[in-house]
Length: 246
Ligand code: GLP
Image 1 (cartoon, rainbow, N blue to C red):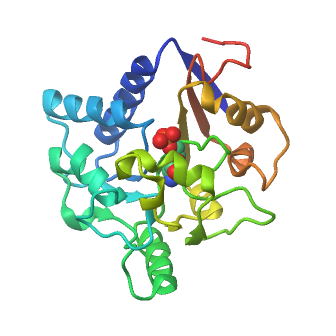
Image 2 (spheres, rainbow, N blue to C red):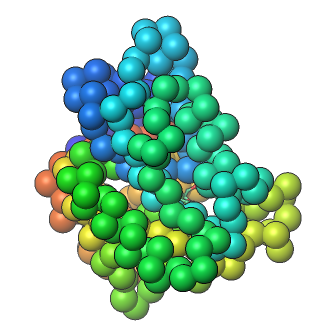
């Protein structure tokens, strides 16, 4: 894993947006795995700005988001699908049918997870997956546990994860769904390239353990040590327990 530390989260967002814009220009039919959360907000805003300023063409880009809450569909506030529409998709010329998303309202959730794996495989896999990280070391919604699931699956969310997502539900943690669907560890690790972004001191412990600790199901992000091409982008507070290398 390589890591870069930026003086503040705005600089990180600008750098990652630039890299994604360049990746799309270099490979117009790129297949992206995309995150939601507070961390990528500034990056998506900058990516939209770059797209409009430089007329970056998204018409052949395909995307697959990492995860979605069970019970929430396209237009429901709080759904990750609605988040992505507002922050990115409605601002770029991506084709609707090129947007891959787990449907948290599917009647057969197991079949929905299998459909998602097939859709990613049919797209010839993920070229680049962008990740955030939970303060407990989760990636996507792969929560710390005795065992982790390889492929897209249904999960019960940790209380801490639900609390971390309350901001998408007017601060009301009781409104955050108790379950979600997420790409599995192998789905993520099968991506050809991985970029993980983390900002703020609340992530510092998980980031340290991910980079320097042992590989453990108790910190799902630690499995990224097994991947040959991972970039970790940090702001100074998130990297604070590490010597800063620029
Ligand atoms: C959420 C998402 C993750 C995200 C992480 C961090 O629960 N499922 O994909 O990376 O937690 O979120 P945030 O960026 O808001 O801290």
